[in-house]
Image (cartoon, rainbow, N blue to C red):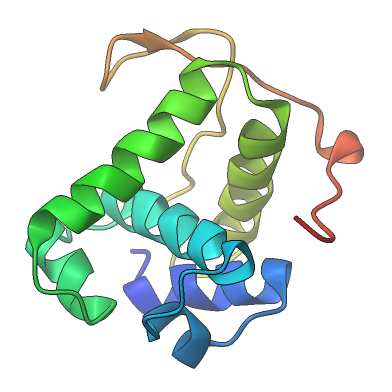
Length: 131
């Protein structure tokens, strides 16, 4: 089973930030973008509630996590190749963990959990570098 720390470790490795950065009150894009992606992955691939996610990131209101997650879903549904690539790369990283339940990457098929159409991009096209 994927743990919150696994998600944070993968996100930090991809974006070159630290767990302390993600938990900080910083609002710069270099920190806020990885934070919202981590929140999205925690919600999708762990049993964490919105309040659990907010507590993990030292926020008090569950609607903050809801905003982050909806923002990621909107980017995915709008066909953001960047967001789709990042989520797919992180999903692959999480799947490589010995405790993973092998999460399915995003595809052009309808997302059965949310009834929304999402896109896919080849992992060979992924480059996360700077935002």
